[in-house]
Image (tube, rainbow, N blue to C red):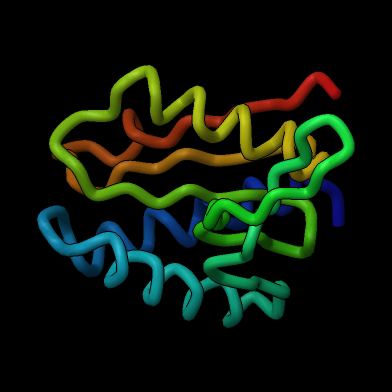
Length: 125
């Protein structure tokens, strides 16, 4: 399954979680529910995946973590905040670059309309 197909399936899971839980919960609650829904589709999902930073020749473990990594291909960053800012978008782009992954989704569950709060980011590699 390619990144686009995975992204499509994950978006469906995001809508299902949002419709069941609504806004206002902690990120960890949405993350747990999203993992549950993704696993129901028989997709491999890992949570809080360590992401080392490589600077020149040095590998530096500075505590970066991917919220979700699906099928070792798609990163999902889960937020539950009042408003996403530009730094949240840049963070996902940087995670894509550091990990060498092509596609990521940024989602903010603390919103009135979830469809306006899912953002697809692509790493041009």
